[in-house]
Every structure is written in C-alpha cells, then in structure tokens.
Length: 444
Image (cartoon, one colour):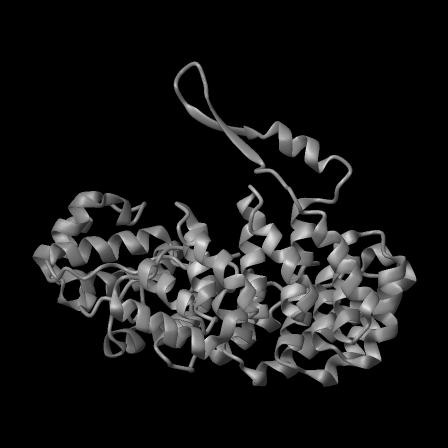
C-alpha cells in the first residue's frame, strides 16, 4: 500500500493535536484506510498549554512507567517539541522507540528532527537504532544507512529482517555485498551440519533482498543453498528462498527450481517453484498456478458472527467454510497462487480473477483486485467500479486499483471515493511514481 503503517496512537495524537489547534486539517490514515491530505501544521506549533490539554485528554500517550501528573507538568512547561525531545532521552528504550515512530514529516520539521535523532544511531538498543535510521529516511536523510547495514550483519540483533526490508524499499544497492556475506556465512554453517547463526527465517529475507535488488551475481549462493538443503531433504528448502530465486529469474537456477517443483511435498514451496518456472517461460508453471487459484471459486466467508446469551458479539467459523475447506490446501497458500498470476501478468487469468472478486471471502477479493491492477486489463474496470460501492475496506482497495486504469469510468469512481481534490492528486502522483506492485503492497 502507498504509505507505511503507523501505530494507531500516532494517528490519535496527530488528530487530537490538530483539533486542539483548530486548524481543521484532517489526519492521515493507515495504508489500508482512505488517505487524506497531509496536515500542513507542524507539531512544534503545539505550545505548553496545548501540550497539557492533549496529555490530559489522552493519558494513554504518556510513558507507562512515569507518573501522570509529572508528565503533564513537564509538557506544560516545555511544550510538545520539548516533551518529544525529552522522550528521546528517556531511559526506557520503549519510550525512545515511540518518540522516534512519531517523527514524521506530517508533524515535525526536518530542522527539528534530524539533529535530535542522529545521536540515537548509536543507541544501545537495536530497535532504537533501527527506528532512528528509519525516521531519518522519512526526512530524506541517509546518515542511518550504515546503521541499517550493521544491523543486517549482527546475528544477535533482534531486527535484521526489518533492516533488510527497509534497505530494499529504498533501493540501497550498497547493501547487496552485505546480504551476500551474511547469507554465505549462514550457508557455511549449514554445510557443516550446524544450525545457522542467524534465525532460520532470516535466510529468505536475505534472498528476497538480493532478488529485489536484482543481484544476478548471487545466483551461485541460491544454487549452493538448494544443494545443501536437498542433501538433507527437500522439505528443508525454505519457500521464501525459492520465491526469491523465482523473482531473480536466472536460467542458471532453472534446474534447481524444477527439482524443487517435482520433489517438494510442501504446496507453498511448489507454488513458489512454479512461479519461478513460469517466469522462465515454462507453461507448466503457469498451469499449476491457475489450477490452485481456481480452487478459490465459490469460497465462503470464513467467519460468521453470533450474539451470545450475554449480548456479546463473537465470531465463529462459518459452517459453509468448514465444509468448503475439507480436502483443500490452506487458504493463504491458494491466495499466493492468485498473487503470482498477477505478478506474472498472465492474461488468461483475467476471467478467473474477475470471478474471484465476487466470492464472499474478502481475504480472496483483496489479492484478486491487486492482481487485476497488475494485469491492467480494462475488462476489470466495471467490476472494480462496482466494488467501490461496498461498505468495507474493499471499497478503497478497488479505488486504489482503479488508479492504474486509463478509463473514464475508473476516473469517475476515483472521484466518488476520494472527494478531496488534493488527496486525489497526491494519490494519482504517488501511484504513477510507485507503480501497482509497490503502491498496492500488502500490509503485512
């Protein structure tokens, strides 16, 4: 999706500050909610009196380990920026993390933020260092790149995968040698029959990073990984590494992908291998993906809500869904086939994807919408326009997808969903800059 996820408390704070200032500017929304114009007012305009009112009305924004009255008094004396800077120096790393997450261009200026955050690149907490580097990047400052690369190299760190993801999103090709180095060290450990010094799931983050940054020279590392894992058993091959190898689309990995496709017993791993083979032009990979995506036809909603004797509404598994899923693979694995078809731009999948937008289960409709946007076939426009009238998040997902169709009906639907002209212009600009794959990125 277009914007990074922000914690709910950040949104609440921004909203309350702006209301207190009577600026009438609407707060920003999460990626999966309707986007609105970024507020023009900066947080530093909230002086001591406004700070006191905000904190009195929202005690949940205060440090959990500090006395309420003390914080109110402190903010009342120094104002919100002073309060924020003091939070950056708080002895509790969780408080420092929270203050860094709040450091966004919507509420603070670069002149305020950058000098205050730079010292935290050397914080003793790995997460604080990560959040400091991430905050600097939000302001276009690259001084935290070295910190992110160091986090990738630290096997004892808690957040190397987050660092990989951020480096990839910012297309930092200087991180590629480090990705290779860390991945190779893990392979050395595996080849000795030892567990990797890195978390087991970390291998696929590194592999995805190398593939996303189009590091074709890393193909030999993928090949070695597959050789080591196959020597023990195909079931040990991580599907994320297979998926990354597919995205790399290097013909020199075709033999490995074909072996995994034929021998793995894990469907999600076989789907990832089929995706890679399809990328290399093998029609059998495409047919495999079509077959499993097709199993989602008619999938019911997974949950039904009931009211118990005490009047409480609770969700239970829908009996129709229970019957539907008997003998079928897990829903999320079938959904991955839908997403692969979109990424591959399989034109013969359009009709199937259109059918999937009419199922009950919105967990299936969402990826079908994204894949239709990736395909860009105008047959999807009437269906997507109709979905914008739904009273759920699907409405906005369909509207986001319509941004990638040059069609008069698409434009009308976008105008109806995003009524604010500035907001709409920003969305169109951002969609053009990022393209559907990045703009419609899932939140996970």
